[in-house]
Length: 56
Image (cartoon, rainbow, N blue to C red; front, side):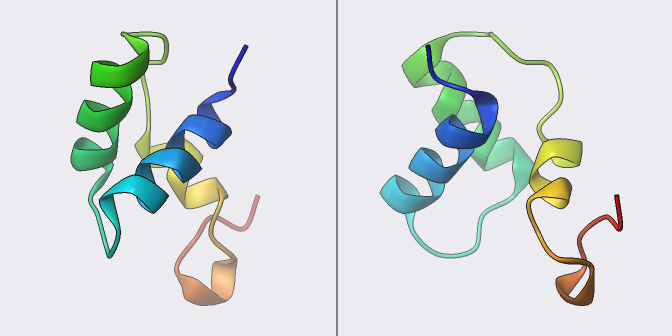
């Protein structure tokens, strides 16, 4: 089973460039269905704080 992080990375690779959480969510839901509710927090957690991500 694919994780949300893996699906987000796959979406970025497929779509290319800078994308919004909404664009990523739409791509993932089209491919994998509505498995996850929130993409913004997960995406922010994947980015280092010095690049605007969450410090968590």
